[in-house]
Amino acid sequence: MAKTKTTYFCQSCGYETPKWLGKCPACQQWNTFVEEVIEKPNSSVPDWKATNSTSQQRSNKAVAVGDIAVQDEHRFATPDQEFNRVLGGGIVAGSLVLIGGEPGIGKSTLMLQLAMNMPGLKVLYVSGEESEKQIKMRAERLNATPQPPEGGVEFGSGNAVPPSGGGGGCYILTETSTQNIFKQIEQTEPDLVVIDSIQTLYSSHIESTPGSVSQVRECTAELLRFAKESGTPVILIGHITKDGMIAGPKILEHMVDTVLQFEGDRHHVYRILRCIKNRFGSASELGIYEMLGVGLREVSNPSEILLSQRDEALSGITISATLEGMRPMLIETQALVSTSPYGTPQRSATGFDTRRMNMLLAVLEKKCGFKLGAKDVFLNITGGIKVEDPAIDLGLAAAIISSHEDIAVPSKTCFAGELGLSGEIRAVNRVEQRIAEAQKLGFEKIFISKYNLPSTKQDKQRIDLSRYTIEIIPVAGIDEVFNLLF
Ligand code: TYD
Ligand code: MG
Image 1 (cartoon, rainbow, N blue to C red):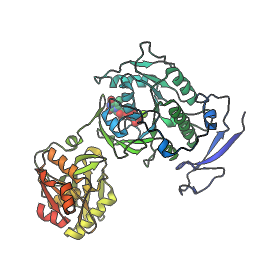
Image 2: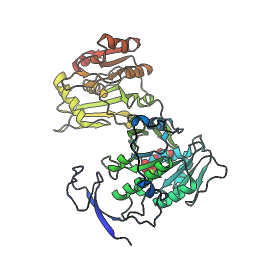
Image 3: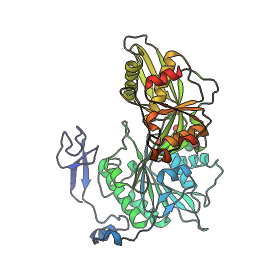
Image 4: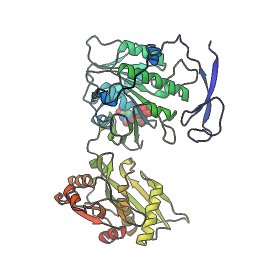
C-alpha cells in the first residue's frame, strides 16, 4: 500500500500547495483551498495502454517553422449544422471538447442526440449520471425524430460488442472508472467518445472522491492523452457552478482544445450553444436550438422566432439589430417604466446587464431631461436569451422612452447603435450585415450611428449603403432619436 499523501488545491484555479492557505497566490481568491487525499501512482493499475510512460520519455527535437508539414486537420462533420458551425466546421480528430452548462439545460440530450445520429460512425456514450434504462428512455424519446441511426443503438451491461454488420452505431456504457472506460474503448474502438460528465469519473491513480479538483484534473489528463494518441475526439460534459464557472478547476478549460457553453433559460424553449475557446476555429460562433418534446431542434433562422408575431405597434417595444458571434439577429426588446409605489424605485433587467441599464437611464435623464429617478424600470429581452452586444443600447433606450411617453415606435422600425455617456450614438461593427438582415426581414427603417456612414472616399467605395432599399436613418445623439420618433 502506497503512503497516502494529502495536498491542498485551490478550487478556483487548481493551484496546489502542501499547506492550507487563506488566499491563493495564483488567482488571489480567498478561502478556496480544500484538502484532498492523493496517492502515489500505483504502477499495477493499467492506464491508457500504459504507453504514456514511454511516450513521456520520448523527446522532441526543435523544428524550423518553415519545415513543418502543414495538413488540414481532419474533421468529422456531424448532421447537426449548428454544432458544426460552433466548432468551426465539425469535430477535429483527436480533439478534446468540453461542453458546460447548468443542470437540466439539455447537455445530455444534445450529446445523446448527436451520438445517435452520426451516420457510419461508432460513438461510445459513457454516462456516470444515468442508468442504461434512463438513457434508453431518453433515446426513445429522441428517436421520434425522422433520422434513425445507421447501426442502431446498442444497450448492454457495459460490454458492448461491435455490431457484426460493421458501420456506425451508438454504444452506451454506464461506468465511472477511467481504467474500465479505457478497457471498453479498446474493445469497442469508437470513432467518437462522449463522457457524461467529467465530474462523475474517477481514476484509481488518485485517492480523492469523484468531482474533486485532483480527480477532475487527472481524469481529464488521461482522456487528453487518449485523444491525442489515438486521434479519437472526446467530448466531455461538465457542470457549472452557481456563479457560472465550469465546476472544477479553471485548469480544465486550459487543458481542453475547445470550450462550449450551453445556455438558456430553463423556462424558455431556446438554447444557445456558445463557443468560449476554440483552438481550431473562431471563438465567436454560436448555435441556436429549440427544446421540443422530442429533443433539440436546430434553429437556422433565429430572427424569425425571436420577434413576436404581432402586427400593431405597442409602447415600450422596439426591435434591435444585434450580432451574436458572426450572426445577425433581430431581437425584440421590451421596457416598462411606471411610477414607483415605494421610496426606492425598482430596476430590473432580464437578459441584459443591470449596470448597463442604470447607465442608459442616467444618460436619458441627463441628456433628454426625463425624470426617471422615481420610476420603476423593467427591461426584458424576449426569448430568454442574454445579449452582450452594445448595439442593443439604442433599441433599449428607445423602448424606455417609448414606455415612458406611452407612444409606440412603428413596428417596422429597428435600431443598431451603442449609447455613449454623453448621449452620443456610437458606431457599431458590421453594420452592413445588420442592415441586410433587417431588410431581409421586411423592416422599413433602421436607425444607425452617423459615424457608421462612410466618410472618406475610400470608405464610400468599400461600404455602399445606397444599395439597400430599407431607409437608413443616421443619428448622432439620443436627443435626435427622441425628436425623430416622438
Ligand atoms: P438534460 O439533457 O437531462 O439536461 P442536462 O444533461 O444538461 O442536465 O435535459 C433535461 C431537460 O430537458 C428536462 O427538463 C426535460 C427536457 N427535455 C425536453 O424538453 N425534451 C426532450 O426531448 C428531452 C430528452 C428532454
Ligand atoms: Mg445530464
